[in-house]
Image (cartoon, rainbow, N blue to C red; front, side):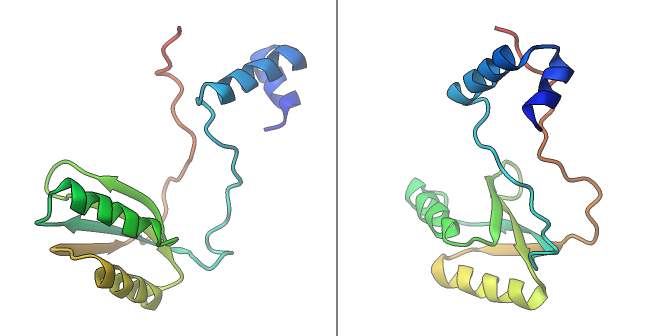
Length: 138
């Protein structure tokens, strides 16, 4: 959003508004400025949620797994979970065949006990915006 639009919304002039934005960057509240890309136009319009269970629960194995996953640009999100699933990945690929190639490369590099893949049929809501209602005033 341009600075002029932000200043209108928050009711500040440019200089104090810019200083507040800089402070948010310095304190890490704003981690990065990004461009949102159209996955379909980049030929990665298929989203796959990959649920992983493993019998390996050592810190060394977790570090190795995390390191392996870093090498796969198709993995756009990766979480360690509570409950029945140990890890959850969101993977973007052009099609099922590309996912199959990704899967084979992954299991070639790390031993996994149980992998379940779910293909998203329709994106109903997607946002990178975080809710701001919970901000604690300091």
